[in-house]
Length: 128
Image (cartoon, rainbow, N blue to C red; front, side):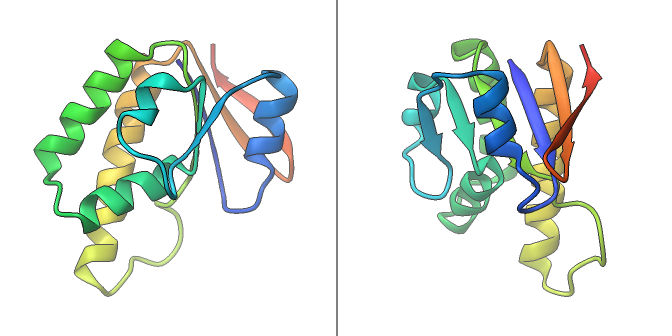
């Protein structure tokens, strides 16, 4: 697994396409859970987590999703926004989503052979 993270609109997907050409993408903004296990790249993974939470998935179910993704699609490239920076949101759901995304991405980073942080289109390898 490879994890690519960074702020919104920082060029993460372009970096992934340049570094790992030919990926078949699943878009977290609209894909089904099964697509996460069939693709070679997931972008907007943070959006998938949000959608799953809005659909009623509980913390334990999302933790299990992270484990299944690690086991069933170990070569996938996961692109996600870094959502834990900045002002803590007032809305409880926004705080929960941010915390859950951070926990899941921390678990994915631990299982990844490489982790990149992208800022202004420039990828910095932080694990690997």
